[in-house]
Image (cartoon, rainbow, N blue to C red; front, side):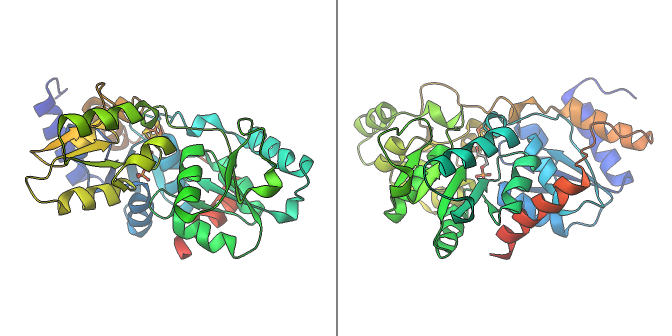
Length: 335
Ligand code: 13P
Ligand code: SF4
């Protein structure tokens, strides 16, 4: 039967999941109908850890490209397929050439390579992770960035943080450290900064503004403001709570039922958090366009292709890249 309606797709997906040696994985930002059919759900850190422990032959990853790549890097023997190979816009802002340019920028400003410790947010491709691994650096996610940076600082080196300037600046602010953004903070000498950030950002989390915070506080006095650290530092500085996806969920679920909260993160997640007293901190609908690309039809087509013995959208990463990207990811998981 070729499904036509959402219900028919759902029934076929359930049948294929039962029959095949597959695990369906979905990030919290996926559409509800896809999210509900996943065996493993979570934020990027949870997905990396849980999927590593899973032992099915195929991982069917509903998310963005760098997430599927991270599973392949951590478990190269597995076959990783993605219903849509959608690419996070922030991850696209840096590649290995821009990474090398950033290292060169620091060298030209009097910081030798051996004094640079690179840290890449997990939202980057495997080539960038591999470069970071080769230079002794590691990956972080928004859930563990503070811990990773605290640990890295013990090496007494300058931290080159890529690609999200907001996450780098927000962690620096929280820790009382000095940060600068390459190409933007031209009046700051990189030698005076502890964390030197690449100029990348998330197009979705940039939508939240200080005016949004003021608007909600004026409209609902006593409301709590909770935001993801990919938001602008000006917004994070005004918030009551700043945390990764899993930390936001925990915080919001811990609030008394009648406590109003406005949340600065992706729409699909906020929408399923709590029935009442929960608002999206924006007058727009901040959906991540690439996370939203994956549909039930895509998930069905991917599973059907496995059943037919001809998998589609399989993730491949070359051996040398896997080797060093894995080092960078494993350094994070060890911590
Ligand atoms: P998390 O690490 O919180 O899952 O964030 C990933 C992401 O892409 C947020 O925009
Ligand atoms: Fe990338 Fe932003 Fe989408 Fe997260 S919300 S996947 S950082 S574009």
